Amino acid sequence: MDATSSPPPSDSAPSSQGDSPAQNPLESSPQTTPASPLESVPSKGTEDPLTALPSFSDLEAQVQVKTEALEGRRRALEAHIWIPVGVDRLWEVLTDYEGLATFIPNLTRSQVLSRSGNQVRLEQVGAEQFWKFSFAAKVILAMELMYPEAIYFTLEEGDFKEFAGSWRLAPDRQEDNLGTRLTYQLTVHPKRTMPVKLVECHLGAGLSRNLAAIYQEALRREFL
Image (cartoon, rainbow, N blue to C red; front, side):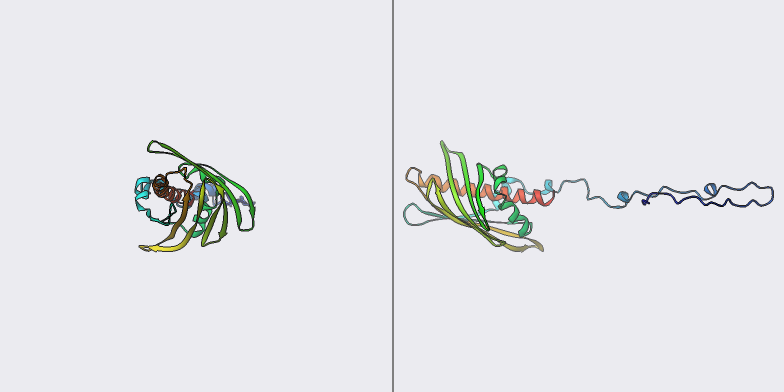
């Protein structure tokens, strides 16, 4: 029997007193329709929590990027941002390799070539119009997943001499809010066909956009 069913009627009829007709018990005891169980559960509200998020440009401004010139044409870059989700949620976003191109700006393809345990071979292609130049690059990366703290990657083949680094995740609290500090580190050595200053500027600007996009995607999934 479900919660909204009425109790079955009694088999015995009520006795009469004097000449007064028997009174229908349903008339003397008005009944109200039980509320649906769903009506007793408070709603979360109609306001979309994602509308309260910072704008994309504000998120880009929160990303802290450092660039260091190493020997020759090699460059080291580091970027980090605090994201108000747990490590597990952020790990889910970072390792959604087949879906990265749907929310990472200027990443046109991301495809898993093979998996074995915590090892992943990944092909990625990026493209961007930068100043008057069309910048495009393809890499095949060997990924090592060290859940839940870090993801390391090295270049197997592609349009750079060197392309290696890591994603690091660390639980972090800001103003009584738990979240995760995400840090991206990269050492890159462009081939001579690529102007090193152009690559440096492109990667620095791209990191701000990419980490802002990861922030947005993590929050979108958190409130799905």
